[in-house]
Image 1 (tube, rainbow, N blue to C red):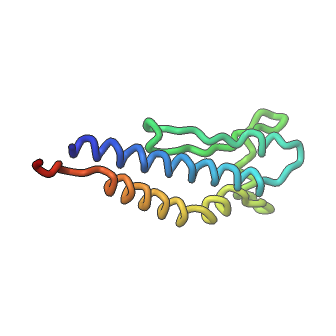
Image 2: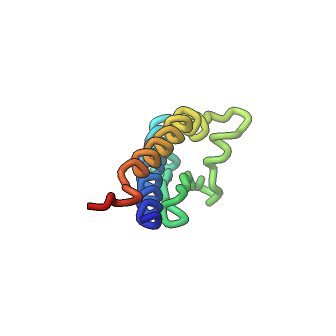
Length: 115
């Protein structure tokens, strides 16, 4: 029964994290400055560690083949888009994962009463 609870809890946490990562990626896309649209279109949300973590990347390249997302985000005249999106959602994601775990624990009975 404990194994079953662990599986439910892990899946609930993964589902909440997946939703949170999707929200951050969508927000980052909406905040991303657009010239050609390559940077915005390069934003990807990828599950790693079997969905226990997510990696959000922006790997657009300029005409010389150099990734330029970091220059847009951190440059002298940068226009941050990723970190503001992350900051806007991080507390909500933490709460959603916590609530998902608590909900999953509450749904699994650890013992069955004798009849």
